[in-house]
Amino acid sequence: MFDLDKWQEIYSTINKNKLRTFLTGFSVAWGIFMLIILLGSGYGLENGVQKEFKGDAENTLWVNQGTTSISYKGYKPGRFIEFGNKDYEQIKKVEDVEYISGNLRIWQNTTLSYKNEYGAFDIFCTHPDYGEVEKLIPVKGRFLNQLDIIECRKVTAIGNLVEKALFKGEDPIGKYIHVTGIPFKVIGVFEDPGGDRDVSRIYIPLSTGQMVFNRLNEVGTIAMTVGNASVDRSIEMAEEIRKDLAQRHHFDPADQRAVFVWNNVENYMKFMTLFANIRLFIWVIGIGTIIAGIVGVSNIMMIVVKERTKEIGIRKSMGATPGSIISLIMMESILITSFAGYLGLVLGVGLLEIVSKNLPDTDYFSKPEVNINVALGATLILIIAGAIAGFVPARKAAAVRPVVALRDE
Image (tube, rainbow, N blue to C red):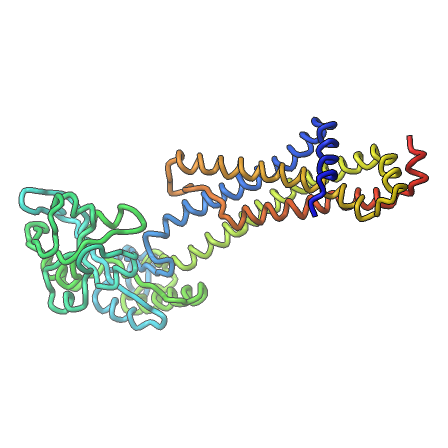
């Protein structure tokens, strides 16, 4: 039941001690404000790093060619390890490989043209699975398929930046662009959630690229996803692939420079573990700050009880129950902590919104934010903390004997 007299009394007590109440509330508000800012900054760092992974599937292994640095079975160091179609077919058989694609980049003349429009863009020869590895999203037409590979079709899927540059609003599907002077039919347009890196490229079937550009059976990089394989399993797969390549290309399996394996699964989990620890550290610091403020509230309430000892004695002599005394003190404590904490919460979230809208995104910091669950959790912590802060003084007040209280000076 709403007790207007009790709230008026709380207001009167707070109004009599404005400075004390302000300083007490400020300590709580500052604690919540810093917690929100620290958590938001932590999420900003995490978002910035996740942008680096967003352009590719998180569960990928990338196998790159290198140069031997160790002598092995009569072979001198300094040999370049060049992948071929057989390497792709062999790695494809490794257990837990989900999607896999070879990737051969064409470095010579990269000028593309359509009618009178020209542009220099990246040209990649791949298998159909590359779209899954890079998480490309078709917006028109389709990506490469297996028939394109088998029949060595002169077809291409282009990024939306290539479409804008060459077609100027014209529908590109079914049209022919010249790739280093050779006509290729456009079968699709795609976009990349990771940014502009991939959408400034075109993809053509690997078999076609090997034939047209006289690259025989050459394969540059071999990329694959590993499904739901664990970090440990992904490491095992990387070692299995390295040993297999070492056997067929005659290099020491311990030679890390002969073949580079980038394990996105392992690196992604390392970053996620790092940021989980950062969030835990931030919570410890933030809650420690809040506790310091709550201790201040509890001390202030103890002083309030001391100052109002005679008043409490009169209340008890007139029939006030211990429960009513406890509720009065606790309500005042909860009101101060909740209001101050909510103010700190609003200011913290507001500052993060301003920073998020005005600070440019980078690869290291992007969109600092705090989700609604964290905000609600912080508010709940405040209410509980306010109750705890007021409970001890309230119990002390309720235990005061009327005769003793009335003698208090």
